[in-house]
Amino acid sequence: MKITILGCGALGQLWLSRLYQQGHDVQGWLRVPQPFCAVNVIEPGGASFNRNLPTNDPEHLAQSELLLVTLKAWQVSSAVSTLLPKLNPRCAILLLHNGMGTQDELPPNNQPILQGTTTHAARHDGSTIIHVAGGTTHIGPTSPAAQSLSHLAEVLHQALPDVAWHNNIASANWRKLAVNCVINPLTALYNCRNGDLQRYPEQIELICREVSSVMEMEGYHTSCEGLQQYVMEVIQSTADNVSSMLQDIRTQRHTEIDYITGYLLRRARSHGVTLPENARLFELIKRKENEYERIGAGLP
Ligand code: KPL
Image (cartoon, rainbow, N blue to C red; front, side, top):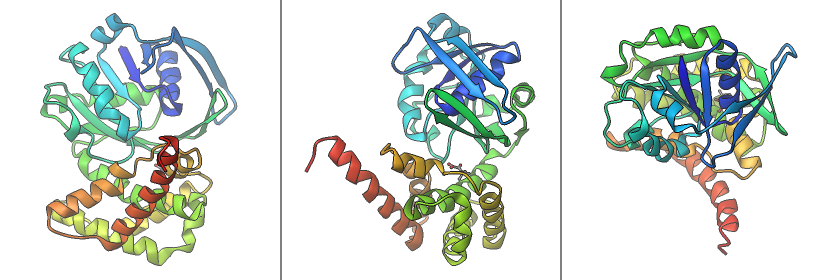
């Protein structure tokens, strides 16, 4: 399959290496074009992949059957909007990021669009990508044109298992949103690893109660207890992880809070509801982010 991967960070390089090894014709797409992408991945068992892969070939892009987007949520709309006119109308776009709401920001289009979440953990160590732990990628259609694309789950599963197909991906996305609404801001504020959050059961319950109330209003059957149990399982299974938001705060990068807690608050507002605990966490993270972004922009 001809595939372009937009975003060559840790997750993008992991997919590039795995899809290449499966015999797919892959290229990376970089915002600032470079002659190639040096992909250097170390797998959990110690095996390594080291190869320069092609980038930013417009012909390859025009012939791609899949555009796999592994950018941060806040980078998606401008990057994908620029590429939309250059894509084959049948090229599927798979958005793989934390949080929700990026698709609402894209200009009207008829591309088959899929959305997904992943629990694979990968991080940079200098110029090397460490695939810290395997996981599951859940994907599914978010536009009518993508409903017949379940075979893509099998293609991706062959490269980087596990991949699960969901006809109703929104429901899986909301469960992941609940996980991110708890783990990401709390680890960033307490400056701790995911596993340390087991010390804050009351606060986790408060966040889950607010998320489940919005999910119910959006028409998804759920319960606070069910969500809380799921979040606790993820906290345990990713106990040693430094969450992506804590990594962003530590390295003074823009966080995905607008698409995680921010998305939740926007949906709540549309139902005329306020969420005191999530609103408080949102403000605290924005304040942290503003501190270094103001300094970075040279503002007093
Ligand atoms: O998605 C994650 C993240 O760090 O962004 C979790 C699931 C919280 C794992 O760390």
